[in-house]
Length: 627
View 1 (cartoon, rainbow, N blue to C red):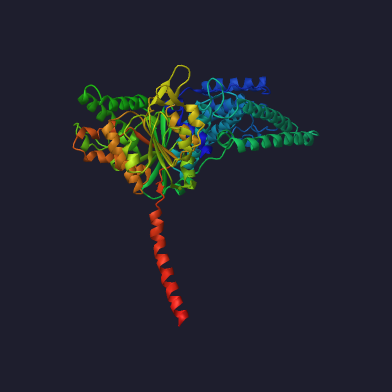
View 2: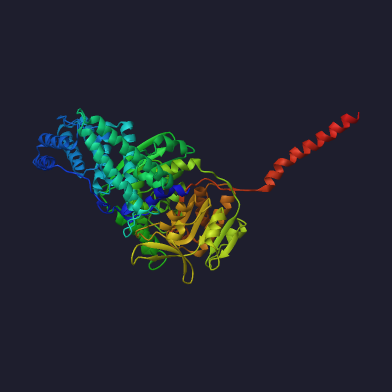
């Protein structure tokens, strides 16, 4: 499970979740990159012609610049491009393919031609490949390239309604998501990515630059007397680079997966993971102006593009404020504000998706990661009787994953029976751990988190978090007094738990590193984490946790157990306890399969008949022998 790090880290970055900046920059050397004055002239001319509306002429100019920068390529037809294997790291190449893509898009709009739109998408994809090479040598590239690539691909799907095109869109989205995720993991101060040494990354950068230089030399020599010699030199460097990557992959597999591995999970693999027809995976991809949504069911796959003609980020923040405001101040005003915003967000984000099955696994992106989906309202309401509200919680089991490939790979997790349950508390009531689960509750003052995390099958932490925003956003678990357990220490844990529950860790405050502690536990080995986004009523916590663990022991999946536990509040006489302040705080992340208890008495019950049969057989055998 420790190898799941980098894909879970999608849940880290506020700029990923809230839009972020437009440039992905890396601070590593660019020595060895070359440019061409003549190619730059053609690029500038192409941009000028494009701005003047002369799209065909712009294409020709971009094609001439491409010929200048692509050794061995001389095709004047703008529809033609160098072989993908001949691409290398050069910012001008990225500009050329971007220019060609925009020119083809403009022509497609003018002529209403699907074939031309396909050529535009091909150019966007080649630009994406060049950007990947730029990332390998530490050169900055424009994040809006991703948005343009996905927008063009989805436009082609809308015009063709071809399912194979939608599959292509999905693959491109996942490739973009991997690259965006990787950059957001970089520490702004040290430039280090998690536990990968910066010097090792720099070494690979220089090897890649050397490889690109040899590639251009080899391509330039094709058809000449020097071709064989330069090909051998190129192959030698390539082998050395590939060996270095192989060694790197063994030690840092998830960094390798995001940075160098071009493969992405397929829709078919996700469908194989889906257990039945009453489950669906909903993956979001958030850009500045559009929200892309992919709905994957056992026997179906569809996509939607929602134009963000509403302030989505502000609405989501406001919904959270309205929910939490109910705990203080004017309750009626907070109720009115909440029910209005909860229904508006449902209409904009959920309703366009059509009918959804009972179990929903969300793969969030952007501000959507901060949205408590379970608290959305599927109908408009005009009162404050929360027991009658049409919450999504009532109809759906909602859980989260932070990568569709993580969801698909969860099918291969081993679900061993749990052996021990440990709760660590800073004074909060944790009766359910002892009474329901038969576990041990330790005081946070003296608890050894390292030891318990390495041995407990289920680990429940009821300790608050502390946030320090002075230098770098970070979180820590506040154990007692001045004693804390930092984010870095969480990363360094060896967690053997099927599930970690953080019942008093109010993590979702909208800052950078949104759920840093959550991803930290998953990096350390936890198969799933259930966390709380804000503080709720202590009575509600007791009711929910008692019912949650009861249902868990009865064999329910984690998401179903949490839904059932929250709905238990509806049995209380106090209608106010049904307000989402008291239950929408919980966010189940990761593998939701049921946990299993090792019940020795079941083994004894199963063995007893066999023992009895053996006993009667032996008696019968002895009687027959005596005769």
